[in-house]
Length: 289
Image (tube, rainbow, N blue to C red; front, side, top):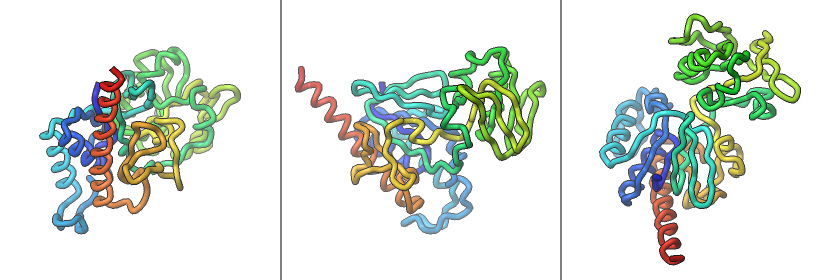
């Protein structure tokens, strides 16, 4: 079990990791390739105190190297759900599970809206994880909506299980098995009755029993049901604590301004306060004994 799990490897998440490690806490960072961060696409950053004239890649590579040098453990992948139970947070990553005493959400801003029917059919045919739920659809028709770089790989996995896969995305995918049909579409709607019956893709109906929505990241409220939002952002207090015990948040997911300095500063606070939370757990356990 880790002391702290950080969900997200951008500037807020890496700042949180560095500051938690500085307090001798074991830290796991769950992230896609950090080069997928919006900061990595910045050609020039001129408003970061003391470090003008840097590129986004330069900054992110420096942050990543710093966190690695501090002993942070990195786990590639998407966090799909977080289940708090009796002081332990169980974090689903693909078909695997990690455990942590505290969690820091640094997921950034969810830039895509939910598709019509997505929330309604979640758990009734809509899934965010091919490796988790693929066996449920063996020998059945499924649609994969590919919005993440590893989506073709997950579609190939489903095809290998025996699912009858149709791949749908706005752009032609790289690495998709040629045996999998591809449909170019950007507007999606999931339809059905008691369960998913079809994906409507730019008006074309694709009959299916399951729809796998493979985005870069899962929205915080899908990760953690019961998480309070304010204005669409994760609500936190000055300690970056959410309404859920042991769950902290920092960076763009907590609201504007969506700036590098804010992300790094909130990450520092979240890392410190999560470390204090873990220390308090140890103290309470010692006193109870």
